[in-house]
Image (tube, rainbow over all chains, first blue to last red; front, side, top):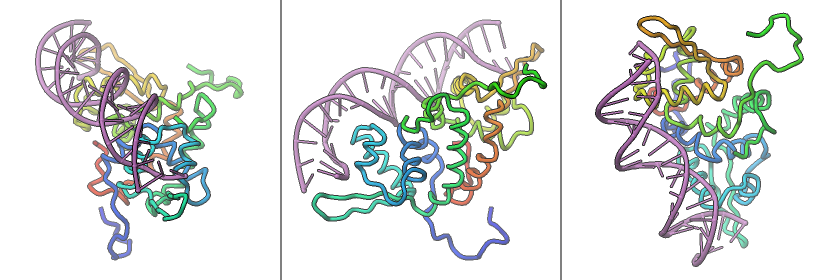
Length: 120
Length: 120
DNA sequence: CCGTATCCCAAGAGATACTG
DNA sequence: CAGTATCTCTTGGGATACGG
């Protein structure tokens, strides 16, 4: 389990519960959200951007973002301004997944039937 | 089935419908099945092996395998023997995903909270 | 050994309406 | 702008029983 050549330091990241991750992966819009945050976006993403890009009702989007946050994959930052602004960005664990995610993206483009619609 | 010396221009694989794939990904045991077929197994996998490895009821496993087959990710081969034998193996599109899947596996080991239980 | 058929309960997600 | 609160309809999946 532990890497004999790894640093003896304690883990600095939050662990990711796997069953929850698996089930979350397939819930509607989850992959689309990750795609936006990891691939499309350059920096933090706002709630409204996601809503527009994904065509999802606010309550569902809110739930999904909350779950992603709970799992420690997204960081939510709220700014007390008027109008309100909330930004989401990948945590370190999720950021590490970016290369893998890009490969998956390529795979989808190659074998996908449509226009590689991550929106679904 | 395909002509080894055939023209390289036409696609020989079935396309993969993305929305269905996304939703299938999160259904129970799907990731576990892919993990078994792509990583754990060396060659075709039998129904019983999966059932034992995943701790899933036969009807659900059957549904999942059928969906994977319908999406063109798994090939099902039935041998008319006694006792009956059925084997599943990755199609070309899924096989191409193996490297990516191994990266995901590594990511899960790194950030997973438990014993990297793909069974879930 | 490898499934399918049925029943039943639980979880999910859109629509709609409302709030700081 | 960025959500929350219900409500309702649909989908999912385990248990159980049975079939080729």
